[in-house]
Image (cartoon, rainbow, N blue to C red; front, side, top):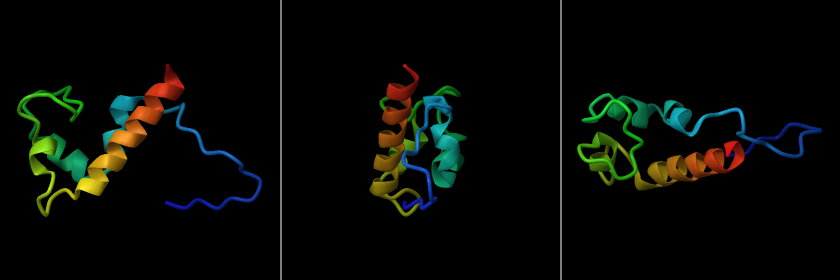
Length: 79
């Protein structure tokens, strides 16, 4: 994504909790409702509907990779 705002030199995500990143991805948020565990992080948990949907029409792998990158960036900025 490209964000162009004159005078803004940096875009940070330090105000976001890594757990809330999924809410910014409609398809991941919708799939998350079917995860086995309510607090699923969609990384390695058993019964994760998001992981099961990768490479299907429901979730493109690039979108999942973006989710993981943003989650990692938010973790680094908040911790």
